[in-house]
Length: 217
Length: 336
Image 1 (tube, each protein chain N blue to C red):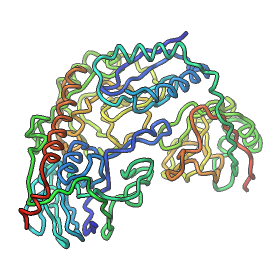
Image 2 (image 1 turned 45 degrees about the horizontal axis):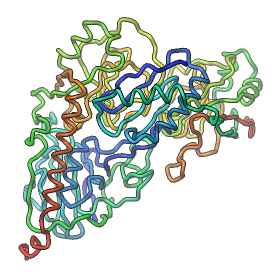
Image 3 (image 1 turned 90 degrees about the vertical axis):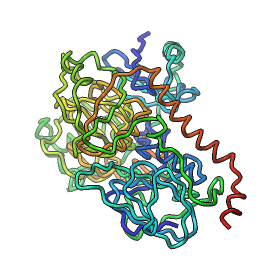
């Protein structure tokens, strides 16, 4: 069993770091522990990261031995079998004004535009964790041939729902924001709606597929 | 109701924040100085969690449409109710039609940064994800998900206890030994800091500089983070970190070597090495620190951090218990 290294993150948070490399089994254990630790009385919030887990405590704690022991015990014995994740389909209009960088990705990867779209929509992606902005999923599973560096000059505003590639990652912008990713298309599904429960479409552990709604000219 | 006549530079509805949604990328936000807002809320008979206004650098003006009660916390921007001066941490009766005006911060903003206004009953905007705080980045919560503008009208809710009678005050947190606060940018602001997870990865020179040098808050600072200016902090090796959860108070060091202290509106996750973390009990000092103020970071341990936090809770509890023990129906008779 690989055990985390536990660090204080100030007086009211603990960061549990697993040794590299980040793997899906590591991450599944992290989601399971996050679920369990969220119900502990001293824990107010859990934040899964990439190969790590942060626990936010309700108040500063001095005697950390109890919490640390509980984390390590849970790490060793938690049941990960229930982590299946939901399957989420995200329809995307690829290319055109909403996907202005399909040609750049094609040129960089040596594929045709059609192949870029076909390979991107053929993949199954797993939400490792959510951060950066509400509902922004860091997903694993991009086919390595599609990896394309970020733009030299980030765009000042990318519309909500834009689907793009940044390095070896793919993702969706839930809100309009500045950003440097290469944009392939756009979905009309709302990724973040604070009036809904839950407020985000995606959660850690979800399995995501992009479907081709249409290829715009 | 409160009618905003002049919003100033940045005024927004804030409460103690929106915890519970970090794993969906939603940060807790809320008042940067929760101590000031909590104390002001207690002074008008509210629960500490009620929503108030966070006013940045003064220059704000508002009118009250009904008889009510207000209290200010945080910095003093020469607040005047119909021309009559009111002091932070005083509970003040207000008559319908009266106007509260906060003066502009001085040219060098040496007067501080933020004032908190609490009003009896709290500002009764709808709760979104369990909070009335404005998320200024994702544009939801508060009043229409944005900073206040001229002409905005904010509804009030019912107060928990009906405080009546003439104005009265309590000692401000600074005078109560809960913390020292400076109103002068030439004076140092002392912050207690716990070493961060990557502290030992920094060079000896960097570790010394962290504690011994003075750090200036650059004007390129906001509710997301305070960027500090000082000697370059270098690591022994530049290994990349994977993204992980972060909290307000984290002092992260990007490749430039110039540290950033994360504030209430920071992203929920980050990837820069963390040389230290400001203790929770000192975060209010940062909320009040003027731009260009000098910081002195002091190493501390968990026991000191817990003690400082408990001192603050005791300060708030003493206000709450004192006010709850008073017979406010007699105060009303006295007024009549």
